[in-house]
Structures are given as structure tokens and as C-alpha cells.
Length: 125
Image: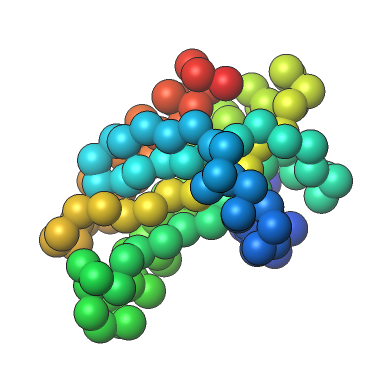
């Protein structure tokens, strides 16, 4: 079990992000909207993820960065369950977590919601 979040685990490819928004599946678990898509990755990790906080809802970059940092930390601590499931099925996914709430929430709330997101991805995927 490694609790790291390497660069190869981050979704950065514009082509993959475009493909994700064009043909990905989505669901909402307040305060996140999750968009995900099964696809083949050659990174050595079964999932790549990106985090987004809209400028429309949080004008100050400090606030956006804080929320992304909190979400990344929660994902880093809880991703192993998702990875084990994906490796067992021999599948890889790309996903994006978009923070849709109008107000910032506490780290504990984000932790529980990320767990809920992971549970739902395991159930659906």
C-alpha cells in the first residue's frame, strides 16, 4: 500500500480530458460531480484523475487551490480500494472530480465524500 500521488496518476492529457467530457459517464455526490470513463492507460497505474474548482464559484485562487489540495489529499489516502478493484478487473479509468458546492467544506466532509465517490465507482465500474 503506497499513499503517494505521483505525476503519472494525474490526468493532464488534453486529448484524454476532451474524450472524457465527450463520452464519459457522470454522477453527483455533493459537493462533487464525478465524470469517469474506462479507457486503456499505459502509465502503470489503473486510474488517472484531475480535480477542478470553478472560478465562477470561488473567485480567489487561494480558495480554489485549498479545495483542490483537500480533495487530492483525501483521494491519496483512500485510492487503494479503487486501485485494488480496478487491478482485479484488469481495467483502467480516467476521472475528473469537479467541486460544485458554492461554499467551502471541511476536510472531514471531503474525506467522507471521496470515500462515497470511490464506493460508487467500485459499484458502477
